[in-house]
Amino acid sequence: MSFTAEAFRAQLTGISGILVSPFDHHDQFDPAPLKPIVDRAVAAGVHILTANGNTGEFYGLTTAEAERAVHAAGEVIAGRVPMLAGIGRSIGDALALTKASRAAGASALMVHQPPDPFVAPRGVVEYVKRVAESGQGLPVVIYLRNDGIGLDAIADLCAIPGVVGVKWATPAPLRLAEAIRRADPSIVWVGGLAETWAPPFYAVGARGFTSGLINVWPAHSMAIHTALEAGDYAKARALIATMESFEALRAEEGNGTNVSVVKAALKLMGHDCGAARPPGAWPLTARQHDELAKRLAEWGLTKARAA
Image (cartoon, rainbow, N blue to C red; front, side, top):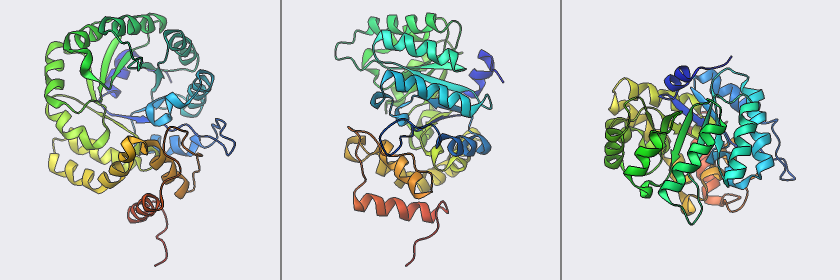
């Protein structure tokens, strides 16, 4: 099925699950392992699935691989939930990915913040405008990992026609509150730092959150979202405490294990999606692997190891 802009906006207040990019043993993109991951997430109720996000190693893919990734995700998702397509790199690559994402059936576009060392705030605004125009009416979500471009520029981004939401991925809830105050009330502000930061972001007006955990344990992410939507912060914090060690592992080595832990977990669960590409850390250290295996067994996601 297709999703209207309003239907997508409503789903954006839920969980935006970020899909991994599977590779085979020759380090080639291999879409086959995506199906059980997507099926499990959809069955759990995850609201949106994202192709070419950071958990999908967007910057580790060639542009051709990113185009394959969005087509593969679109085929597996098959319209069951909205697909959000990551867009980025040079403006030429971004426009090529926008075209590929439209053809793949994307419901909306997520524009990565340009990592270029010479980024002007007004240049970012122009970048997003060009992607939005190329999207031919597809809703646009800004992925903001660094609020250093300033609140004025963020307000200008939110005013671009077609922008419906912002994934706020910087640990500054009070600055988020001010950004929300300056923007059109129709903009959806999504917690972009996964489950652990969702409560403080919710407290200042964000709704929904991004999640890499959905590749591994989508039901738990959904339980956290349900608690937050009900205003039950105590329950949400307790649920987050259960999986916090998983996120702590992902944050090690300067966040270099972010994708590695997800892929190692999937392999332990019998869904091998290959290695994380450099410059990500791979493989996990023995200590990291053992701690991860222990947590998955405790959560009932793998068979308990023999004593």
